[in-house]
Image (cartoon, rainbow, N blue to C red; front, side, top):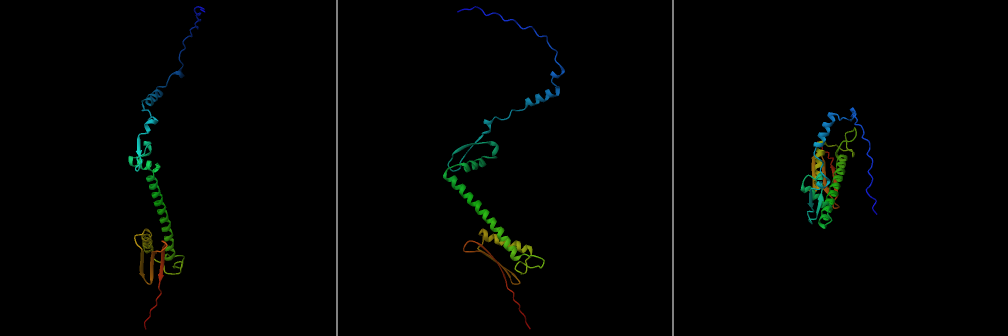
Length: 194
């Protein structure tokens, strides 16, 4: 059913123009700041951060990586290889874990060897003797003994024996149970001629 043309609505009466107040104006210094900010380049979108792809060095599985985290492609490939589930990557991670454990064990053994050498050859107390009541050795010689013990622990030598004269001997060797043996030998010989 046709109802005809809709009726015209009455216009709103015109509002008188208001003069802008001082607060409505933009400060010229502020407008310069706004223009400078608008001139800055926009930050990179998130999809641009995924710049590189890296592959596992063993199986070739490719993963995307973020450029912020890595300096070069080689570091990215090491990271992706550390995350890969292929058997070769597992074996590599296991090898690195064993290597780190061996390094930690070696450091602990070196600390224990240091303590034993200090007990056997360093001066303790005010009386100028070692823990066993024997003559101490000077610091440079004790440092040399630490280096000798380290050589035996690392496996560069099987045993080290040093005779300092005056009846003082040092011996560092590996035992059958793969432990480090540190020994101090003192011979008190008194020889007199008449």
